[in-house]
Length: 348
Ligand code: MRU
View 1 (cartoon, rainbow, N blue to C red):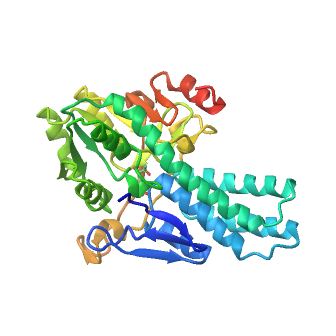
View 2 (view 1 turned 180 degrees about the vertical axis):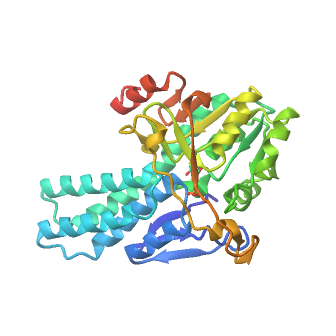
């Protein structure tokens, strides 16, 4: 059965509680947009495309709570709800993309004289969710061309079904290659500090019986040196106009290692992850998270009290280290600026 981390049911947003995985499979049901904001902040729902879907559905929940008339007041209050949602996490472009799309949809619904504006916003949020699954399947189809029978693929963090509306980006490529009958082995980085690899990617791969081995983040170089990894594939939180890519902290180190060992390093992401307004990765806002994520695990302390901590959640991999970027429109390679400009214009 398909893993669906976030969906709309009976005017509520249902999420898989990703903080409880892999030990407990339970859902969080949100009936208020503020619960969705909390769920995005505390990683109940996480991964750039899933955050986008959750944000759109949170906005739709907010819309349901706003009096329909007068329309100007409805729109103003809806925008205020959107502003609150946008403050939940700063790095994943998909969150801002989804909110912009919801605001634009409201603008056109008003212009075309639609009566049930909240209903229109619910439909749009559900469309964003359904489209994301379809887009991931397209990414899978394109990306699977990069995967050969017998590959040993390293992935970092979770860019799977759990990080999207379903199917996944980087793991979507792996899923499609498997569906095509290719024999693969996946190495899963545990992904400190909150272990999205060990908890979530390992859970997904086990569920689907895809052969996989879990490693600590600091083991990747050793495996590459021993020719145990033939490809690296990761997702993305934000890709800018020159191809620089923000993804979970530790991705940049992997890209440097891959370059040094002449191993292809691929990024898989939907166009909604691209930020065409930023020229280079230096401008990407990098989220810093609570120090407890580093000093504790599941409430158990693992560092001396009062220890100074630095906890950036993402890093930026320079475009020159990326062998190819897989999107729903196809595979792009260097020079990225021209290819990304074509994606922006919709001419790819
Ligand atoms: O902090 P997270 O778990 O939201 O970070 C997620 C990642 O970095 C993923 O690799 C990225 O969002 C791509 S998901 C398809």
